[in-house]
Structures are given as C-alpha cells and as structure tokens.
Image (cartoon, rainbow, N blue to C red; front, side, top):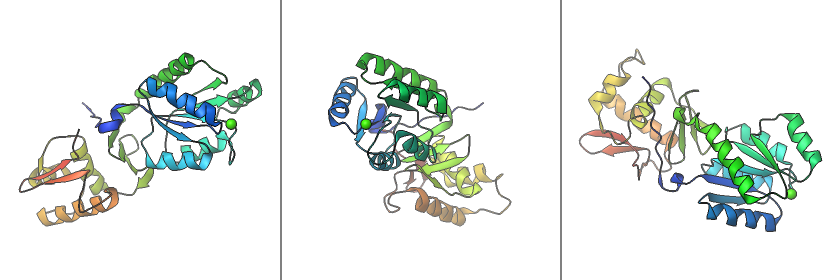
Length: 239
Ligand code: CA
C-alpha cells in the first residue's frame, strides 16, 4: 500500500500561477482577475524572467504568451520542460498561432486565444489543474524541495539534487512521514536493506549532514530535515 503525503507550506495552500506576457495592460489585468479568484500570481514580461521565477518558486501553472521580446513562448516552454513538468497554457494572439500550437504538439496543456473572457480562462485553468492533480500523489514538496517518487529524483528550486541511494532513502523515510519524529534507531532500521555497508549511529550523523548540505538553504538552520534534540529527526514543519 502506498500512501503519499503532500506537505504544503504557507502560500502553497494557494494555487500559484506564473503569468508571462509582455503587454503590461494584459499582464496587470490578468493578475488582478486571478487574484480575485485566490490564485497566487507571479508575473514576467519576458522569457528570461519567466525562467528565473520558475527556478525560484513552486509554480503550479504557467500562462505563457507566444510572442515575447527575448524569445518566443515555445522556447520558454522547451527550457521549462528541461527541469519541470508544470502544466502550461499558451496565450495566443491569432488563429495562425493557434494552428502552430496545435501542429507542434510540444506538450502544452491547452491554449486560449486573446482576447478571452476571464471566466473561460479560469475554467480552462481549473481543468488543466484537475488533469494534473492525478500526478500529485507521487510528488512530495517541502519548501523549495520536491521529491518525485516516480523518478526517484530530488529537485531543489527546480534543479536536480544528486543523492546517493542511501541518502535518498533516509530523506524519503522522513518526508513520507511528516510530523513523525524518527529516532536514530528507527532510521537505521529503515535503511538497513538499502546498503550492504554498515551504517552505525555516527555514520548516520554524517549522512544527515551530507543530505542537508545538498538540500537545505542554510545547513545551520535546517528547514527540511529538523533535529529533534535528544531524540532524532523529523521532516520540516507543516504550517
Ligand atoms: Ca506578446
């Protein structure tokens, strides 16, 4: 039986949307409308800014204009796809662009033609988000760290983190049981089958330190793997 828990922190209770559009009036109008609907909005007026935000924030959905000043929407999507599977809806200006979107089948989740009605956009967004929810069960998020159980990958700010099998197993043990404090003995028992190498109490400390160096923003003030003094460790706080 696999029960996966999604850990949601603070703002992540809201659906976060990245709006990429170089026409400021459209951008601000979209932002206003979506905020009325309780979406958490990030905005970018060019492709590079969009990519930067994608790497820094946990974005649930991207609305992506095709014609941007520094690169086109397809190039932005291609680069996003290098590090994340976020759903993307293209904002197209005319029928010619629609046919390009349809023809290319580049992995966009939907498209909508400008000018569009806000209600139509929101219903499309919700449909795309619903379709993508089925995948959520295999993703665990803590802060800016994502553990993808399907691919056994760990991402920090959208970038691959290279963990050894043993480090991954230790991290998984903790994040799959949020709020549970693990004694060092329990962790050692859990990871026993992963590695032939003998892991004792002292080496566990070393492994935890190595994992923290790879995933924490500040190893001296960890937020993903917390130390419970005198007991053991637990995954980061759920707000
Ligand atoms: Ca444009």
